[in-house]
Image 1 (cartoon, rainbow, N blue to C red):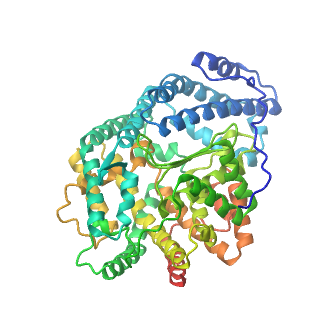
Image 2 (cartoon, one colour):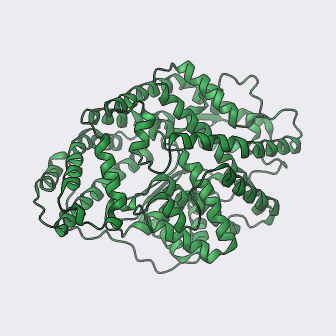
Image 3 (cartoon, rainbow, N blue to C red):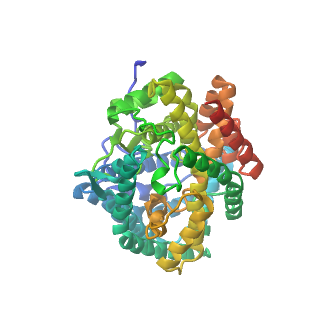
Length: 574
């Protein structure tokens, strides 16, 4: 194992808050907000000092909320951690919102604002101005209610288990059986997973109806015709429009879907099947046993750290530091929330990685993906304002998806056997292409949902089927399984927890392929450009970040085709 002497980061000394300050209640926080609101500002320097003090307060708040969320998702059945998170969401966040608005007004109305460095603060001030435009006081209690209801999704899905061969297991662990060569085992596992989700379909539909109603009201209160348009503003989508998304969906349908249909035809032929079924999509088409790149979460971490060190010392140090500090929870277990994330912790600057590893290639990809996010956190941790550390998802996901691809040259750490290594790479490149139609499906569905807020659950289910069938595995037969299909969207946590955060994955996936292409042509410069781009945080536009990485922020049909052709060529080399 390659290692370096690690200097464990300490948080910067606080300037505005006391070193021992802890968030226990709104009463302990309010004096700081009152002081910021009342402070006299008599020069550009004093305005910048005020901005830095506000940023420090925001960092402390963000990190405190982060730990509450992490602890809750690590054990959704723990009432104490759930209450701690809910307390912040229901008792503290609603009190902060009107102060945030007042502080934004104070900043934008300051006579000294014109003296600020326009280049340094242009993106930040643009975001503040947008926040002022969409703020409505009557939305504060609605946002609180939305946050509370969103937590219910993790609690419902985190409690889902199935019993196979007498063993109770999470759905993630059960899904590993979809890679087994025994078709009967795959079918049993797939049906068990679907039945378990189907069992809670009405509960999840009811929860979504409540969220839909609340979100639509937030949009109407803010004078938007629908929640989609509100979210485009709230997410700071300055660089593209809903129509650009629709065009992107169409391009994916024209360029990527035919490629994947061809791959499915090859799969069907190799498996010697009369019909492809949903449980035939994850098994190796040549009948080889599932890849097992690691056995336990600890081994997954050790090997990923080594891959990062093989790429670059700084990258290795990032993950090794997190390991040293205990900032990871990797293994799947009952009661743990589903999914995976890298949570930035703004004060210490060392993030936390959460995932549900079993022992699959998918877990390796997730770990590399979240590791890319983590590297991004390290590259921006010294930035002067908290807001600079948080680029939009089109940039954040570029960090993670690029890492999946540029690390491939070192996957022999996970796969010593040459044949297994080739197989892992090809499988992942297929999944890279599969990202596009699934993202288009989810994104197109969300546009429809919020354009039709009066929908019934039945109309929603039918629209999901209509969109799903345009983009996904046209050769797969669902005969006899029709009851499950209308509810397959319910497994996508983004629809419940982070609405409209999804098209970014496809945009960033395109960018990641371009980053990988540059890396293949010149590894040193490709990696340097990747780090250089991420180091910009959110101080420049999305297009400028992509330009710093040596790529384009472009999702035209021609660009998609050129990068899809590159992936195909790489697959043929393997």
